[in-house]
Image (cartoon, rainbow, N blue to C red; front, side, top):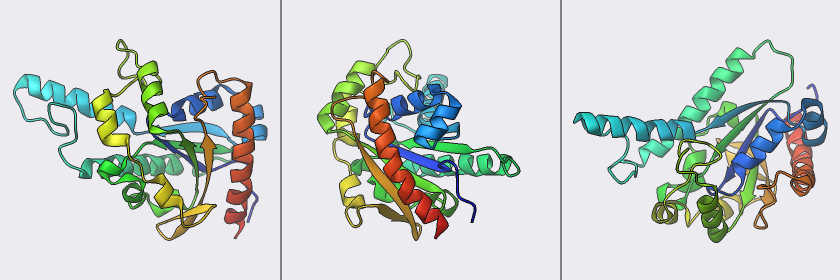
Length: 245
């Protein structure tokens, strides 16, 4: 088997506000040659379920204004059914499948970055992983950005720009909703069985934890670069070995 030059698919998971989008923004701004050499990240394609989620909010608001039933959320902005979280996960995988199809004959080094958050209230990562396709799992590694609930709340408040609520880098969630949906997460339970990988669809998916309680992601500076380099280097070795097995 050919030794890979970059991660094929990297799932970046965490509570809202933990720094997922900031890490992706930093990677996208890093010169391609440096990004590949230092972080093992090729040409970036980003898959984030927030734009789809926000479209649902906008569509429901329009439908309600026109006098029709809302399709996805109630008037307080909560999903009308937990199955919609599954739909978000499977939509990410569907878009990933299209990405694979369209680069079938492309020999360049590409990395898909899949970003999402899941709280215990709606099934957590355990439920989400049940809807990750084998095609994604067989190519993936996981970077989990670890922050406390209190830090998630602080960053969520800090980043919110009321003039750009649809922005990936500037959106926010009301305190009450953030607490209900994301105060409790099941990452530690899901990752407890093995220190290096999580089994998804019967496939061993390597993971590593990026500690960000001290918020090195907001500044996008040298401290972030150094920590990301060390963390991804460890993940790279585990993932590369798993690809050669």
